[in-house]
Image (tube, rainbow, N blue to C red):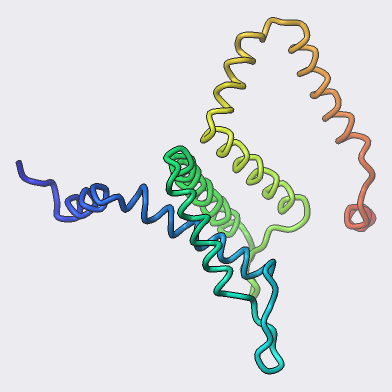
Length: 187
């Protein structure tokens, strides 16, 4: 049987040698852990001349070991793969949204930026999206949904949902305005 294309054959070859479930997760975890260790300078610094530099050799070894531990666990690799693919979709959606915002905005030298409530709202939506992605990858979202579905007619669950909704509405209505919103209202 012939292959659909040469590129499909390359993708299948990469899959067979473990590129997607060993090599790429290892590199991703190594890069992220190394960057965090390098930026936070947890293991101290070394002084060369007048400049202080992070301990790159220790950071690299620790990141290497952590990446190997992650790759050794099939469950962690599955969660990492699921989260990565869903975060890419969320990132693509945010880029498309920002493109849409930019197409309806005035052109300026600095470009188009979300400001004020739009920026905060966008960040909250992205945070909720990432939390939901992690919960879904760990199968906790499904467990919570099934529990809620089984207990939906229970008075305690219905009361809790109603109280959360009321607290949200009261919080939005009674929040104190910030200095920025006072300036906008006075104009």
